[in-house]
Length: 326
Image 1 (cartoon, helix red, strand yellow):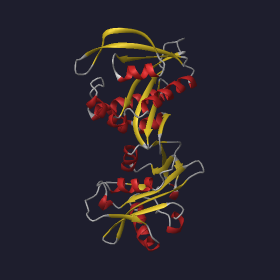
Image 2 (cartoon, rainbow, N blue to C red; image 1 turned 120 degrees about the vertical axis):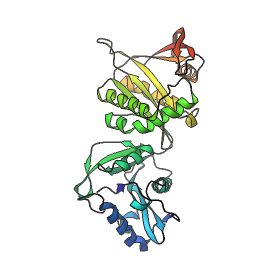
Image 3 (cartoon, rainbow, N blue to C red; image 1 turned 90 degrees about the vertical axis):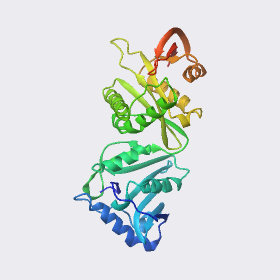
Image 4 (cartoon, one colour; image 1 turned 60 degrees about the horizontal axis):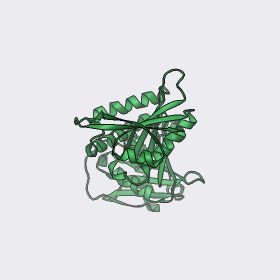
């Protein structure tokens, strides 16, 4: 099985995380066997201490027992590292231990450019955990240890990065993007209010349009945190496939002003060119940060309509329309 599985359990106290040592081998093997037992037909996946020495290995210990493990190792020569194992015994799950172990592994390689991992296709809770921590589906399903199937996940690890998502990645982003939408709506009245369920339905609709070739979704990360997105509507009428509309630029409030919005806009312009769209349009509330960004990125104003935009709170604003040749 994949070495990545997390489910609900009871709380425990006195948990300590430390680097693994040679005499932890038996405890690590027992932990791997306990996790494998939850998945019929799976085999224990945690590597031996010698195998793991090429990277960083961290364990969580409670009362002398190994109850959690995270391991990270180089994956290729381009600065990609693999989360090789993240295991937590059932008794201590859902209480922050997995997040602490993941943080320890990620912190071991501050120079990493990209992180990858594989997660058992049956481990729904583990998939939600990694998506919450900004990993998105990447590449095809593979046959993992024990002849089980595993989804690939990946994320940029450092700096500001923006990337176009395929349908699988877009679908795996819906919870995280829903959280961003809710946080943005709480601070910006121009962003429509939505319950968590409504937000997820909205992003599922976006994913469906990505799969159908009607929409492009660009996601943006800051130091490994998925913190923003922007969309390009390419569902144009017949014989109008030279143009597209940039829509729904969203930035997590704590990450505004640091360059992510500009990176997303540059990325969506590049995506438009890849898809053969030569003319781009967008609209922005007059006086907003979006207007300032459009002007800073050399978009040209095409007109103003008074009272065009009405927020979910009933406030009306003038809208400015911009265009740009991609």
